[in-house]
Image 1: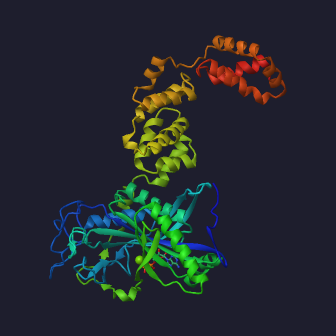
Image 2: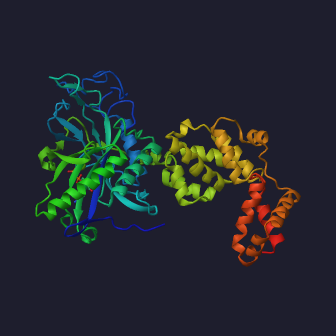
Image 3: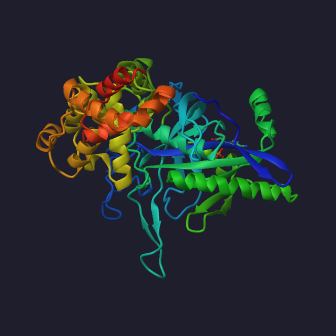
Length: 503
Ligand code: ADP
Ligand code: MG
């Protein structure tokens, strides 16, 4: 595996590097909201999933939803993080038309989950080898989501839909350990894979159930290392926060644009203002949304309506014992159990469906061959056609059948590709296709010898050449394969040719 190399941006006055910390808002998988019994179902009519608590009617009291707490603990354990037995809810005061309380209930001074760490797997976009890096997690806390203002229903009025008001979110905050646009996207992918595996968030980014704020700053080479040695943030540049990114492609584009914008400002003699910016996907640029508030602007104070949250170690241990297999564990198991590469294992565990499909194909068969066929032939085909695995015209069972025919040498790998194309076209099972079109591999040495003899007799010049240059044997192999309609067993062809030509 390659090591991590700095991502360098060239400026007018020298090189720059980027530093990023991410805040991910993940909607907690729970049927009810964080402090009320109202439903969290997506797509309900506006304002139908709103209790009196969510509408902030005077005198209403929030009641903590135990399921949401459990999901936060479960996620913390999946992030290999410290679970705090004592945590507390604070009011974060601000005005928004879609926030009827006038404050958001969040956790500020005492979050439920403390420091953790995850391994992030990066596949650089512009070629280059895959690598992993550790990203430290600062904290995870629980908080309420706000409602939604609707500006496009009426030319003169704004409407508000409070269905989302009070839905539980987990805010997962990373340390500033992310160092390139590709790493930022990979970090979000990894968090998403973990929460999906845990069942604590459905990870649906299109619905906004998982969205990322990316804090971006730029610095000169060497500064980041000083920061890591001392923990002193003054070695880093001023950060801007890019809000609510919910696509991997936009995350990378936005960071790229933002880093260059900051470099231009600094090189022009200006200073970067700490602010919140929005990415305009159509224009491909970020623009200022508001200057960034500091914590004291929110006038945080403990919510007097809620008691501190105290949980017991025994309960945490119980949750820990029930954790499913996580992506990193699954990857390690695939490598050891199936003997496949770290890279292939990474591709296969990227989502649970792919992993399940692969395991069904590999069961009782040549697992390496299965991994090749699934990741290259099948995924290659699906990608090209823009299809999801669920729409695959070839089931795991059917692909397994094809692989079994390659393993027992009924067909060659080359013929198998032809059979696979016919399976995609709907011709049926591999064995039936091989039978119908007479594609069985010829392993009968007598038959192969006959073809070999004919070709040797017809090409005396090539025979002279191969004796001087044994590496030209491939030409003969090609001729024999062609003459046999691709059906001769390549291994047998090689052996017979070598024996007859004495190379
Ligand atoms: P806030 O709540 O005001 O956004 P936080 O202290 O929670 O502030 O930090 C938010 C995120 O910003 C964290 O992920 C942190 O790692 C990141 N961050 C802090 N300083 C920098 C910096 N100089 N450059 C890039 N990211 C930073
Ligand atoms: Mg924050």
